[in-house]
Image (cartoon, rainbow, N blue to C red; front, top):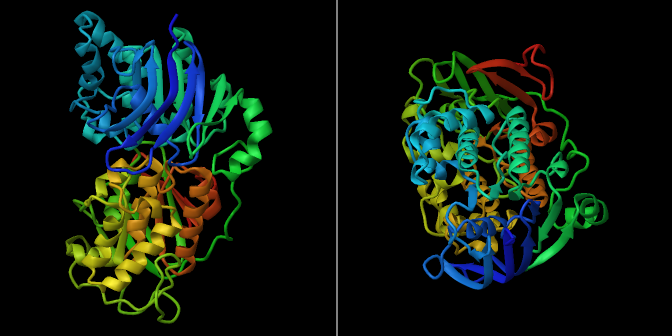
Length: 509
C-alpha cells in the first residue's frame, strides 16, 4: 500500500522570492495517520499543503527541488486523492448558491445525480449549515464560508485531508462541531490527515502525531503529542509555536471610557444597534458566526452605509485625542495634533480623509492589498494623507521591523503566509496613525510570538488614546486586552458588558 505522503529533500521557492519557503523536507505519512503540522508563522506549512494538493506547479509558480509523492504519485497527478481546505475559505467558493457549491465537486467527478443531493443535505447538516439550498454564498460570514468549504470536502471523501486552520474563523461551538465532524469522518474512512492549526488546545486527541517544521528548513520535531508538548514545550514556545498551557496574561486592567470617537445609533445593517467606541478603550465584538459582527465593523469603519440609523464620528476636532502634541511613531503611535474632520457626514468622506482618521483590518486581509510589494502596501495610506516622503519611509521601516516583515519588504503581499498577511494588514491600518481602529480578527493565523507582538502593539494604541473595535473569536485576546465586550446574537447586541461577563450583566455605557 502506497504511503499517503512521501517527501524526500523537498523544497519550494515562490517565483518572486529569493529564499525558499520550505527546504530539505523529509517526511512520510501513512494512510490512516492523523498528523498535526506546527511551526512558526512563515515556516512553510501552507506552502506544503498547497503543494500536496497539486495547487503549486513548477516552473510556472516557482522552483521545486526534491521529491513529493501523494498516494505514490507525484503531487497533483492522482485526481480525487487529496482534498484541501484553504486558509481563506472564500477562495474555494465557486458557485452562488449553497447547495450548488457543495454539489460542484461531485458533478465534476461524474457522481450520479440521484446520489448528489442526498449527500449535499447530509454534509451540510454535519457542519451545521442549516440554510436553504438556494441560500446565497456571498451572504455567508467568514466562519460560515469555512464550514461550507469543509462540507465540500466531506462530500468528496478524499483519501488525504489537508486542512489549513479549518477552525480559525469559527465561534467556539462551530469549531467544536467541525473538529468532531472531522474526527468522525476521517476516522471512519481511514483517510490520512495533515492538519495545520496554531491554537493546539483540545487537538491532541484528534491526532496521532505532531510534526514541527523548522523555519530554516526541515523538521524540528516529530513524535506523539504528549512527547512533543511535554519534552519540547518550552523550546517550541520560545520558537513562537503555540503549545498547551495557561492563557496569556491580562496586559493592563480594564480602563474607564474616554471621549466617544464613533457612535452607531439604530443601525439597520444589523438590527437597531446602538453602540459607541471610546478613546483609550478596546471594545471586543463577539458572537456566533453569522450574528452580524463583520457587518457592524464595516458600518463603524464607514465602509458599509446603513439603510437607516447613522454612524457618527465624534473625534478629530483639530485637537489630539489625549496628551500633548508630539512627533508620532508608527510603532508606539504617541498622540499628536491632527487636521479637523470634514464637515460632511461620516459615510460620505473622501478616501483621503477616511484613511487619515480610521484604520480598518478586513476579515480576509488580501481583500485590502492594492500593490505588488509589502513596503509599497505600507506606504499607500501615508501617501494618500499627503505625508512627506521621509516620514513615509520612517513609518514603513518601523512597522516592518515591529511586525517581523522587514525580510519580506519586496515580496508580493499575495505570496505571504496567512499570518504574515494578517500582520501586514494590521500594519497598514496603523500606518496613518488613525484615531479609530476597526479590526476584524486581527490575531488570525498568528504564531505565539506574532500574537504577543500584535497584542502589545494594540495595547500601546489603547494607551495612546486610540479607540479600538475588534471583531474576534479569540478568547485570549478578549481576556488580555478588552475593556468592554459587545456580544451579538441574531443581529442584536445581547449585552455590552465587562469582558467575560455573562450576557445578563448590566450594560456598560
